[in-house]
Length: 461
Image (cartoon, rainbow, N blue to C red; front, side, top):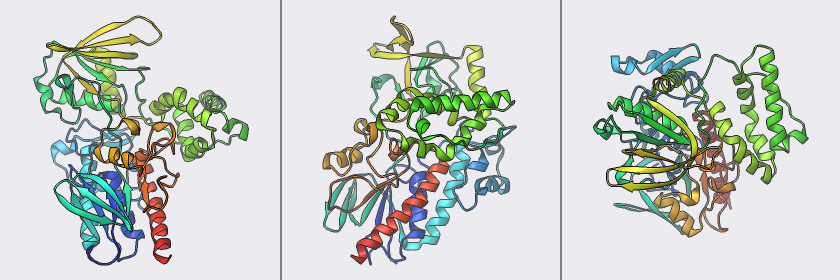
C-alpha cells in the first residue's frame, strides 16, 4: 500500500547495514498497510562506511561462512561468493586460509547492494528510501515529524535508530587531520616524515592498508593506551559452553579468573584459547546483564580492551600484513596516553606519556588519523543525536556508551510520546555484544517483532 495512505510509516534513521537489516525485518513483521521510511544521509543504501571501501586489502573480520545477511540461510554470503563471477581485481579480495575464507569488505558491499535491490523491488511502495540528513525529530500527538535538509517534513508513527557506530569529536588539528575513509590524499604524503594513527585496533589496520594502497611508503606510528593488536583467527572450533556459579557470575574478577582457568586447561589438553573465547559468545550478554553496576564498570575498565582483541579477531592475511610492517619497521606500535596535540607550522606535535612511566615524549607527524572507533553518546558530533538529546527524547545509557534502552531496544525516554527503538552499536553498554554482523542481523529480527507488537497494541487501544 502506498505510504501516503493508511497508518503512518515507521522511520529508520541510518541506511547502512543496520538500516537494511531493520527495513527487511520490519517489512516482514508489520502489517501490509504499514510502510517503512528508510533515511540515509550520504551513502548508497545498505553499505554504510564499512562496506563502501574498494580496497581489496580491507578484509572482513569474520569468515565468509559467518557473514550471511539472512539468519535462515547461514551460508548465504559464502554461497554468493561461490556462484558470482568476479573480475581479476575483485578476485584478489577473496582469501582462502587455513582458518577459512575471508572476503574484502567491498565484495560484501556488492552482496548487500544486490540484497537491497531485491528488498526494494519486492517491497514496492511499502519501502520508501529517503536520501536526506534528518536533523530534527518533532514529537506530535500521533508520532513524530521528521525534518530533513532539503525535503518536506515527514510524519511517522515511530522511530528506529540504526545509525551504527557513533561519530565522536576529534582533538586533531584540522589541517593535519587525515580521514581514514577518504584515502585519496594519502599518496601525496612525504615518505620521509611520519604519519600518526591514534588507536591500534581494527580501524588502525584499515588505515595502514589504505596508506600503503595509496602509495605512502614512510613510517607509521600507532598509539593506544595499551598498544594491543587484534589477534588473528585460526582453524579452531568453539569449545563446550561453560557453566558458572552465581558467585562467579556476580564478580568481574572471578569471571576473568574462571575464563583463565579454562584457557589454561585447554592448553594442557593441546587446545587453543580461541575455542574457549568463542564458547562464551552465546552467554556473554547474559553474563554482562547479571553483573552488578560496579562490576560492569570494572569489566569495562580492566577487561574490555583485552576481550576485544581476543574476541573481535582479524583475518589472518590482515594480521600478517601488520606483523610484516612491524618486522620491517614500517609500523611502530606504542602504548601510552596522548596528553596534547599541538599544531606547528608544518607538522603536528604530539605529547605522549608512555604506559607505565611518568616521562613525556614528543612525536612529530605530518598527518594524524583518528582510529579510536566508538564515541560516547554525549560526545557525538552527530546533529540528529545531539537534537534528540536536547529534546530529551533519548539519554545516555549505562556508562554513557550508547542510548538508554531496554535490552530489546525500546528507548528510555519521556512518558506519553511515540515509541523510539534502537539497536546495534546504539546499545553499547546495555548489551555486551552488538557490533558484529551476526549480532546486528539477529537483533533486527527481534526488534521488528517488538515494533510490530507495540504498534499492534497501540492500534488496538
